[in-house]
Image (tube, rainbow, N blue to C red; front, side):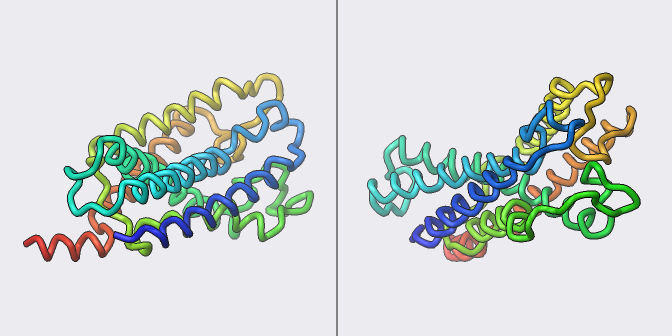
Length: 240
């Protein structure tokens, strides 16, 4: 299976994601967010996962090209199979699920309830300028478009090897880690606020938000597994 289109998609994704990440992390944060810094934002964490996935997929392309075409997984060297497993079946699905959740949450709130995702907004109007639309798209839309295209449209995608059960545990662990991470770096008693106003709520509502988000993320993973790339479906038909 030719992975040249996958390579091109990942190179483009890495370029735009890095540009957007670099631009967004130079924004001066308000005092309530400044201490925790840019690392607290879910968008930036997802961008990091995307760029790691891009690099892993690019390295995997190089390794597979070095090994040469092979019809069966058993015919490939161990390191080639390991590279394929890690890049395409562990890192990619995690990044894809994260980047599916980001625009799903961001764009509806950005368009209709901006005060829920941006600090310093009163009565739905931002007190300062928004980030340029080009950066907004680079960090809140293009990562999903590129990763989705790599999985479904490049001809190199395949059904992920992680089961739905395993994915559920990974997604829950990721959500809990992010929750604990925010608790570690944010102290409301000192005037700090959570990165998104919709998280500035008491318990158990905060935990409920994380549970709902994790559930939605898992549902999307299950849907990706239920509807795998078309190339895999064709191969399954031929095998039958």
